[in-house]
Image 1 (spheres, rainbow, N blue to C red):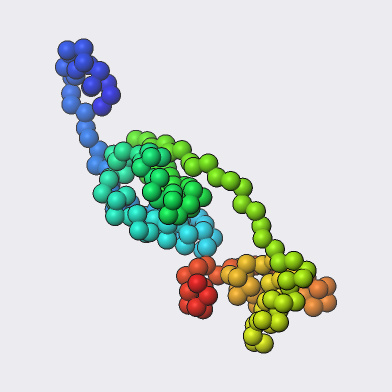
Image 2 (cartoon, rainbow, N blue to C red):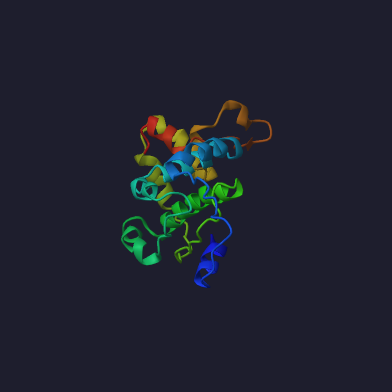
Length: 193
């Protein structure tokens, strides 16, 4: 198309009109992307990509066909940044970028639009102090005491704690091995989020 445009700018006609290839919409390509994501990623990563791309912004994103929509500029995203935070938007842009890059790799679109990321501050960690820990444990209902004690001693995430099985614990060596995690969809079933 570029060559045809340049020829016409010079007042010359191209020998033949370029063949326009059919470009799928994001909606049409989305399921193929998810199938590939499920095969190539761990379940929690796949679920994160799926939930980000199915999120509330999907209606606007799907109005543009893959590779033909204008890339959103930072000023277009400032309202979202105030609502969600820069890191959240960066995660969404990364997931959308992976979808578009895969479409490019498969030859469905000519190129994926580039998008800059928002500048973010390094996230600090918050820990309970040694003084806060006993007060926290005293406030925990008895049925959750062991769960929270393991969380406090190991620093495991909720999904990792809920996915633990007896086979992950070696009582002889005193080791606990994290082999799996539950994604946020499963955590919703437990009523934790």
